[in-house]
Length: 231
Image (cartoon, rainbow, N blue to C red):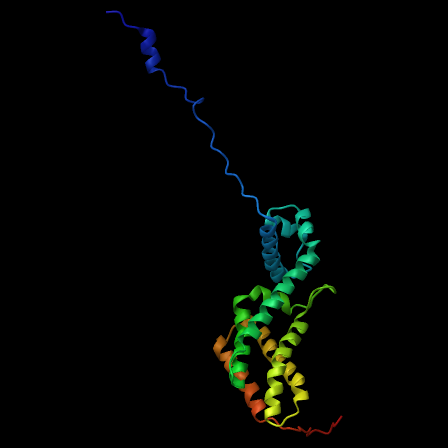
């Protein structure tokens, strides 16, 4: 019997499937919309500004973190200053909204509690934003500073204090002074609590309100100085 060697060798020869195999397709990167890219740059800038401050953050680093070139950052914000200004403005509005939105109670003491909790909530939930706000703004054209933010919040509290002063026979014209004092006290305590985080938030709020409320509760209509200096 004659064996067909050519057919046998062909059947035993390893198949060359290189032509049949196709290289894996590279996953196509989804291109961000302009709004998505802007949001990404804001979040990256916010994180870097909180960690390194304005001077310690560069456009190069922001672009690298976003995986884009420097001109993209300039296209959206005109530079680092523009990005910083938008970040600050957003954080100021967020904190102001949280504080003013919390003032829903009828009793003045509970209003104090709500305002204290709102600021401490913001510090706890938006720590990076608060770190940015409490730094002195290095940009003259920035949309605001922490001092101006405190003033805005105090204006909201001022109306509440004015009504309370009037009902108790105090001069309502002094409400702005007391509003600044109270809000400033809470804000400075918040800066301290940002780093130590002790005692717990509810306890900090209770002590703030304890000082503010009992101080207001025993308020003299015409306080007098007891030291030698009278002017």
